[in-house]
Length: 266
Image 1 (spheres, rainbow, N blue to C red):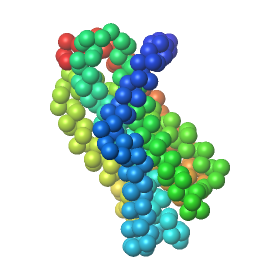
Image 2: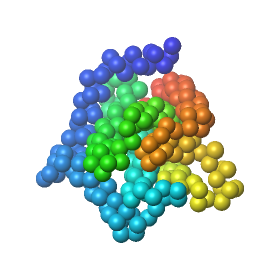
Image 3: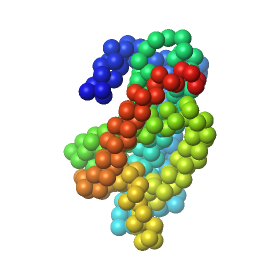
């Protein structure tokens, strides 16, 4: 019921949330000569570079896959989806500190801030992933109907990022070292996740440790859908789903208990 109360509070301020997301997007590209075109050019450049370097120059192949673009798709699937996860977490860890002035001056549901962070990140991701999908169609590597399986995987990933981001953002208000430490941990987490390398090249003891990394299953699910054109192993996503739900409940519970004390610390 408490979660519904927070959702209702955020919905009542949907105009404020939509305006904030729009202002962030405009602020990011408003002063650039090419404006919002950079949202297309940057990811397009990344896809072209990965495709040219790994597929055409290095002729990099995935083990057991002879497709020319397999490794490029594997790499883009991992980096783009990890990028969404990292963007939500990076912004969430400072969202209360960055908006300290707003929190002190204006009365609004504080839960709006994580909602704005997630929607802004999803908007950027939709643009980038849309371009990547267009590349899959043009190159003849679109996986077909199984592409729809991305949606539940994306839901698990966003819930995981929201729960963890809410906790880290709150802790960072009271203990400022948390944000710095988490930024370092996020770098280690990236390399402990099979984003740029396949799990098959890892030694068995290291591969067994991946069961403790929820993002390994999430990124692996994306790569299975987009590279192998088949549904992911849903059972492998169960620990990540449970971790996401537990973190969301814990994050919302901590938020409700500590939101009032934040103003004194900011």
